[in-house]
Image (cartoon, rainbow, N blue to C red; front, top):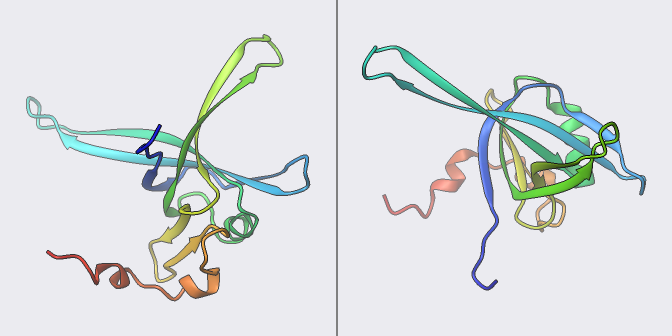
Length: 149
């Protein structure tokens, strides 16, 4: 379909330490559990309410997997850009088809940025033409240059 877009942008906190697994081809993959929350005030009771959504993040890029393994821990705040993907698999116990929806961090235009603290750095996917060292020097103000408001 011409003119379609599959892009997911999330800011949240890790609900657990990253899980690093070895694939059949020998490469590593990182799995992250990311929580995003929204809060509001209930108009009738004045009570503060909150809803949390959990997202599965899968990082296939070898360079990013190493950085995730080294620097990310439960509670870390991150920003991710990736693609939404639903995969089908068979449950070994029941034999039933199961579905899993994940945000994939791979290929061009995917990134993971660590937020919070003094250690802000952007970590692009390897297919992006920038290196980890080049982008780790970026600051949030670098993004504001062309904003007209």
